[in-house]
Image (cartoon, rainbow, N blue to C red):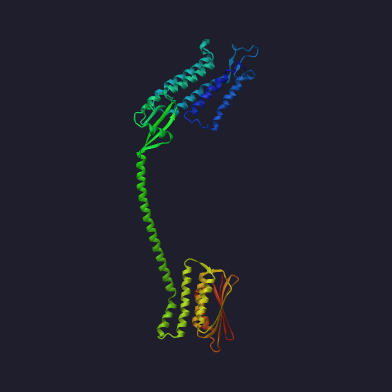
Length: 454
């Protein structure tokens, strides 16, 4: 096994050279991808085959009836596989290095190619064993040497960047920079010369300082001295100035836009108010016309006239309030209907009519239903105000349906005909919303029950 052990470096040095080419240009913290570990598998398999050759003789064969010596053997198939990997890995390494360099000058490939072809020729000579030349012996050393020659030729050709010519590079740098010794004396200086007082350098070592608006001094300690350089902030400041100008312009535009938006909001509010006013006026035209007729037909405003105007005024006021609520709400509390009827009942009671009002609901209901019921309530009051003496009203909810119940008590002989009351209650809007009513006569009482089906 010791006789075969020199194949270990023969197999793994070219593989390490391939890894060198793959990792070239990566940072020290670069984590190689997991799939690269597969490259170790062929090398380990071949190494095991070589070291265990005495068992299977797949690499070298010594014959069956002979004493096994290093002078009398033949190469088998796996030996040539080993040589193939010794050639293919350096070729792949050189190809990867050339691809990563991206240098346009093809002459730089002369030295690496010479080294590569020499390695291939050497391996061929070693296999053929021409003339038993001593110079081709010790193949392990020769392959290691050729790998080193290939990498060194890549460095000399510029395929691999080397750490050299620092002084020329530093002098050619256009950045204002200098290297000082521990006494703050200039040792190296770039072509962009600069002069900075020692006190500023000492301050800049602690933290960067501004010489003026456009020049920043930076400094840091290095081995046996200090590094000092300047940053030109003029372009950045120019951009900042432009940004500040744009910022001011945007602020002005923003103020104008806010003013325009506020103006549009005010305009929209005015238009909305006008629409509300127009709707309120159009919805209350019949009631306002009634009030106007009463005023025109009664030159001297008596108590009875004022009472009727008071009832109409309460209705108009409350109906306007319901119309305002309808702009923002589809459903409102049943208390709103209670407030409307209660205020109308207060006005009716001033006409020497005994009024009684009760409410047994406190839920949210459709505002459209509230308006229609209040309109029918007002129609009944206006049409039969002068004929009844007692007026009882009750609001309640039963089976999720809203009910408005009215009981009108008349003196005998003043009870209105059923056809007249049906005509008063005949309202198309009420019917379209699912409204129904019941009309009953009990002696001198008229019972009207209106229901808004849910």
